[in-house]
Length: 283
Image 1 (tube, one colour):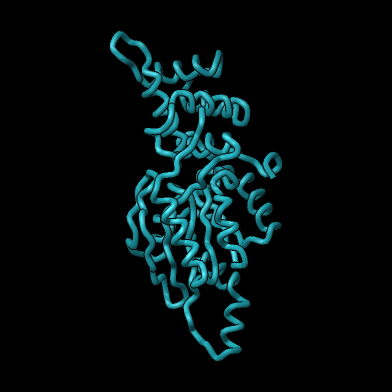
Image 2: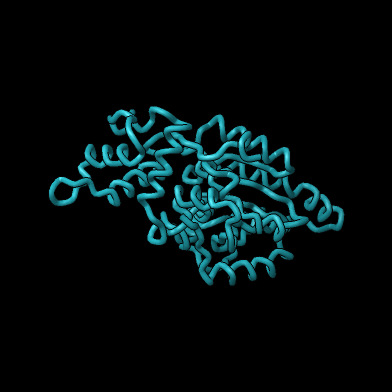
C-alpha cells in the first residue's frame, strides 16, 4: 500500500510558517509518544533552524513508559528540550512553562541586558495532524482557544494565543511532508490516525498491526479479545470479528468493521500502553 496525504492547505500553512518564524523565540513541536520519529516532520528541522527547540512527547499515557524514556534520552542527546506529557491533564503541563523559560534562558538574559523586561516569549506550536496540538493548547491555556477533534485537519489557519504573562503562542495547522521516503512511516501514521481513514485500506492496515503486535507485544491481543493468537493474521482478525459480533448477514465476519474496531481499540489505548517504534532500532 502506498501512503500519502498532502492536501493544498498544508502547502499554504508551510509557507505561512516560513514567513512567521522570524517573529518566534522558540519552536514547540508535538509528536506522538507512540511514534516519536515517524510523527516528527523533517521539514520542521529546516524551518526552525537556529531557534530553540522543545519537543513534547504527547499522549505519553498511551505509550510504553520504558520506550518513552528511551526516546526522551535520544532527543535530549540531539540538543532538544524534551518532556513527555498527556495534554488532557492540565496539571502535567506546568512543567512545560518551566521548560519554555529554560529553553529561552539566553534570550531572556539578552533582553534583560538591553533593558527589555517582561516581554512575553513568543513560541510557535507545530506538529503533524491529529497529534493533539489543539488539546494541548486548550489545556495549557485553561480555556477553549482552538477547535479539537479526533481526526486530522481540524486546525486550518494560524492564530496567536496569550497563554499567560510570560508566553504568547502561535498555533499552526498540522502539516505532513510531501513525500514519505519510507512507507513504514506512512504505515505508522496510519496506525495512529494521522492520515484520514477514508483514504486507506483499513483491513490491510489492521493486518499489518496484528503482525506488529505478535512480534513486539505477544499475548496482548489474546488478553484483550479472549482469543488465542493462532493462525494467520487474517484468521486472527476474523476471530476478533467473531468474538465482537462484527458480522454481515449470514453470520459472515465483516472484516472492514472488525479492522475499524481493532484500530479504534489501539488508538484509544484500550489494548494497553503500546509504542510502535524504538530508538535502538530507528536511531
